[in-house]
Image (cartoon, rainbow, N blue to C red; front, side, top):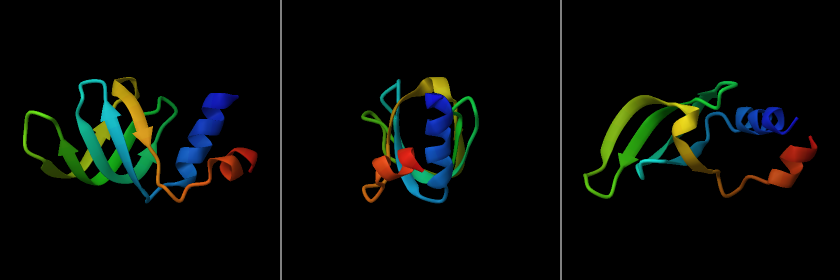
Length: 85
């Protein structure tokens, strides 16, 4: 039940900016285009940042769900409302 609810939340915030930190320590910020049932993310207008390298701008990127450490959602997002709807 919970994974499906999580997917529904992400589908409601398509075309919004999110930040994803990967298990490697790389941070990726971009506009969410799509998310699939395996939590694979597809972003556009991406800024990729790591501690050892300069930031890189990429037009589109896909991120494998199993490589994600955490996702920072938009500040305006009311999680409680989305969970109840």
